[in-house]
Amino acid sequence: MTLSHIAGLAGDARTQDLAFTMDEDLFRVFYERTSRGLAGYLVRLCGDRQQAADLLQETYYRFLRSEAVLENDAHRRNYLYRIATNLVRDQRRRPAPPQIPLDEPGAVELAGDTRSAERLAQRHDLETAMSGLRPRDRAMLWLAYAHGSTHDEIAGVIGVKTGSVKLMLFRARQRLAERLRRRAGTSTETSR
Image (cartoon, rainbow, N blue to C red; front, side):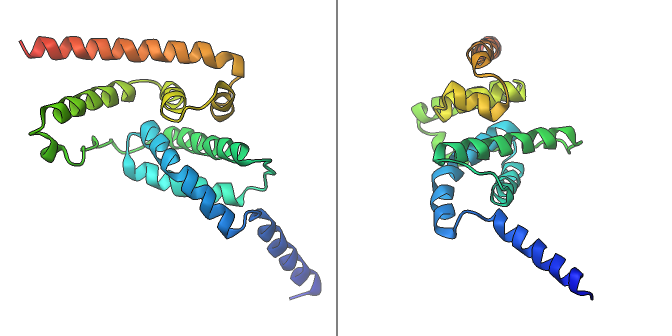
């Protein structure tokens, strides 16, 4: 091994260390604030909890390895969601095995309570309608209404201009409403 080779290895080690600009305590706090919401976002986009868990890990790994200089917590959060969105897009480009429908935990216990059963049915209808939307529509609706993201934040995550978000959200809501109306129409016809 030559001296220049050893110096090159030392340079590689310094470069790798620079990628971890967040100390452990700061990352832990950031993770606690963002992981639950990001996990829900990924589940909605993927429709598969296991795949979402894998993408969650990959998202945080890439976030930590990036050398991006981010000014504040809001920028870090947007950057994190941008990484997650890109990972989902990349995942969709690959052929995947057929998805197994998600089972609702606790559905058996809730069956006796009529209000809970109604909420469970509504949630199932909403999940079914959301799963039929395009990934971008699902992402925008989830960010806007589940996370309360602003139009600027949504634009940063999905990679469009801020001025386009309002119209795109309007159209996504219309498509979701149409799917819910069709679903409600088919469920009333089958119950007759």
